[in-house]
Length: 301
Ligand SMILES: Nc1ncnc2c1ncn2[C@@H]1O[C@H](COP(=O)(O)OP(=O)(O)O)[C@@H](O)[C@H]1O
Ligand SMILES: [Mg+2]
Image (cartoon, rainbow, N blue to C red; front, side, top):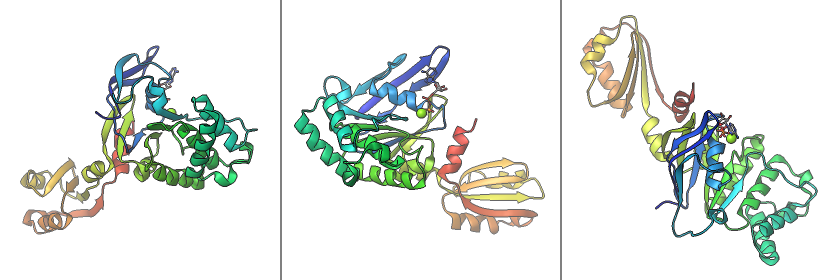
C-alpha cells in the first residue's frame, strides 16, 4: 500500500463541512502537493493527517510496516509557525529533537545534519530574532525533520515569503525530496509545478483533480485553436466533429475552441477544408492551454 491512504475523509465544524469525502493516496519517496484556493480545506486535511484533529467520518490508514502512534513517522510545519526568538537556530532544533524523544546526544547530532541540509549551518549560532522569513521557514523544516520522520508535512511553506525567500525554500525542498517524502499545501500552482510529483487539487473540501504532474501536463497542456467567424460555425463543426485529429471542442455560436493532439496536422486539416475556406474568419489563433487555465477553471466559484 501507499504511505498514507484516506477513505472518504470528512471534517465538519458545526454546520460547515471543511473536508468532504476526500480520498488521498500519498506515496513514499515523492513530493505531493495539496493545491487549492483559500478555504479549500487544505489545512484541515493536513491537521487530520497529523492527528491534531479527528475526522468526523472516514478513515486514515498508514502503511502497516509503520506500527504504533503515527505521529512518530510524521514531521510537521504549521502554516503559521511560532519560534522562541531568543533561542539560536541550533538550540531550537535540539529542543524540538528532545521533545520528539531523542537523547540529547542524538538531538545534537541530528540538529547538525538537519541545519546542514536546510543550509543554516553558518547561522546556527545566531538568535532566531535575526533570521529572515526564508531562514525561519527553513528552520521550521529542520525542526520538522529532526526525528527522521517518514513523511514531512508542510502547510503553505512558501506563501508568506518574498520572491527570494520562496526560491530559497523551494530549492531546499527539491534537495529534501532525495531524503524524505514530502506533503505540502499551497494556493499557488507555480509552486506545485516546481517541486511536486503528485498533485491533488482541492475546492470546497473536495478533491476535484488529481494525478502526477506529468499526467496533468500531458492531459491538460494541449495545443488549442481559437477560431472566430462572421457566420455561425455550427454547420462546419458538424462536418468535422468526431474526426480523430480533434481532441475536444467547444462551440459558442461564432466562437470555436478546438483542442488537438498534433498542431501541424490540425492546421492543415482546417486550412485545406473547402468548407472552412468559405467562412469569413475574424480570428484564427493557436495557443497552448496551461495548467493555469485548468486551475482557474476548476477553482473559480
Ligand atoms: N476550527 C474551525 N472551526 C470552524 N471552521 C473552520 C475551522 N477550521 C477551518 N474552518 C473552515 O473550514 C474551511 C477550510 O479551511 P482550511 O482547511 O483552513 O482551508 P485552507 O487551508 O485550504 O485555506 C474554511 O471555510 C474555514 O473557514
Ligand atoms: Mg490553510
